[in-house]
Amino acid sequence: MVSNLTRMIEQVSREKGVEQEVLIEALEEAVKAAAKKKLGPDYELEAHFNEELGEIEVFEFKEVTDEVTNEHLQVSLDEALKMDPESEVGDSLGFKMDTDTFGRIAAQSAKQVILQRLKEAERDIIFEDFKDRRGEIINGIVQRFDRGSIIVNLGRAEAELPPKGQISMESYKQGDRIRAYILEVKQFSRGPQITLSRTHPNLLSALFENEVPEIAEGIVKIMQVAREPGSRAKIAVSSRDSDVDPVGACVGMKGRRVQAVVQELRGEKIDIVTWNPEAAKFICNALAPAEIIRVIVDEVNHSMEVVVQDDQLSLAIGRRGQNVRLASRLTGWNLDVIGETNYNETLKEGYRSLLQLEGVGEKRATDLYEYGLRSAEDVAQASVDELSAIKGISTEGAEKLIEDAVRKIAEKKSNSHVEKDSAPEVPPVQPDDGELNKDGVHEES
Image 1 (cartoon, rainbow, N blue to C red):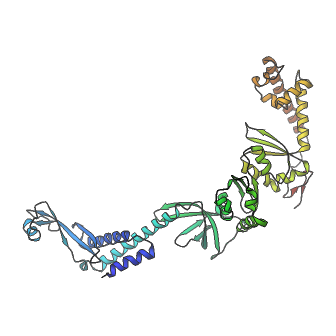
Image 2 (image 1 turned 180 degrees about the horizontal axis):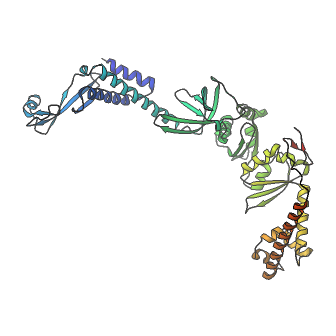
Image 3 (image 1 turned 90 degrees about the vertical axis):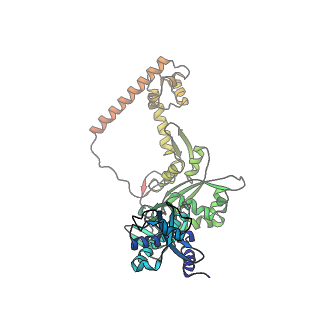
């Protein structure tokens, strides 16, 4: 016959999701604590759950001794032999106690221990449930607001959406459904702390993984993501199957897949671009829809100068520089976008500065230019070994060229400072919030 205690253990185990062994251990500890509180510290006690009887039994242990000096911890050999004929001095004998004698206060103490252990067990279960779910998207209900953070009810647990994880243009009220990215799960003495985010770039990746089967199956891979949460994002994708267009897979039929993600992010614009292992081609894709004329790569400074047609300049830069800024984050390169006219003028100025160097004519200037030294500044920064590698330039000639280039640049800077100091003061022009038109002039939005 199943006892009431056994039924209670089974019921609590089901409702709380706590293993029965944990509950039994908590009960044993609670009853032992209650007995200690009732009897005092001068007792050696143990509590065990008797499965057959369905009750917690408490035993008082005493050492068998010839002379009893502490009746709570010792028993005489004569008394021990009456209980167990094989008893010897030094043995430890257990005496079953009547748990009904512990009283109401002891029972309350037992209840507190049980509740504490249940809370600890529940916290451990919640942590174990969520610790491996970092990186997932989870649904919850807005429960309350706490110092700028949104506390989200996840069912068995609560999570925090801190201010830095919130999109500034979004607003929620109590009871609203919310979808967020599990950023972090930590265990504390008060319980697990689950931190959510709606601004993390990986939220975008996870949303696309949910919407695009090819990503979930590993055919299409998300390579990089760059976001300005609530405004615009760029995502770079590649495909391991030549028959699968990664961008088309993410866009979906009639744009349904990407639109589902856009709606979840409440209108955040998303550019999907094809990833390319060649940095220059990748950057051309990232700056789309602007058409790129030329890309000049500077491996040393990990930067690129991107040349576009003059009427494409505002498109490439984007509103308040957003397009080029996101492209830079997406690719990991520092980008400088310049119009074709300005670029050509810069090249001409650089070539003219080469012709002004001592002993440099058109042929020598062309040789320097083709070698990649396109201005006096480039020559000044070059090494003697680099210059002497050019046909017709000796080590001594290289040293003189560098010295002359450094001198010319210093003179140019000095003259520009003099002109600046003597020029009338003009208040700086503050750029407005408008777009650049095709002539590079701001237009009001």
